[in-house]
Amino acid sequence: MTQPAATPAVRRVDLRHRYEILVDEKTAGLTAYRDRDDRRVFFHTEVDDAFAGQGLAAILVREALTDVRASGLRIVPVCPYVAKFLKKHEEFADITDPVTPEILQWLESELSR
Image (cartoon, rainbow, N blue to C red; front, side, top):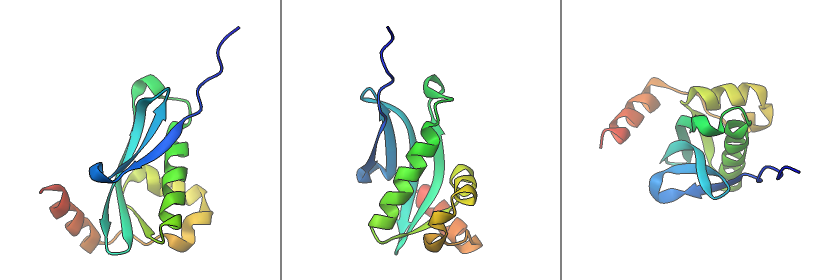
């Protein structure tokens, strides 16, 4: 008999500006952000190849966006995966702001520090 797959857990790691998804206590993926005023700007999402094909990116992003809502913040989806997720999950439309040239310029300066 095979062991059931471990239930993934998502945690916010504020010091590293990201949410991580863990499987069996191992980091399987992350979605990175920077905060600007009342907006959480997501700019990168990745899942380790060893964990690909398990739907972990969708779980990770759903949990991250749910946390953003609970925190009273808004979402800016610079990350292509987060943007794609939001197109399929309109329940987050009320807290989503558009990506603007100004946000992109700000993010670039933040990431170059």
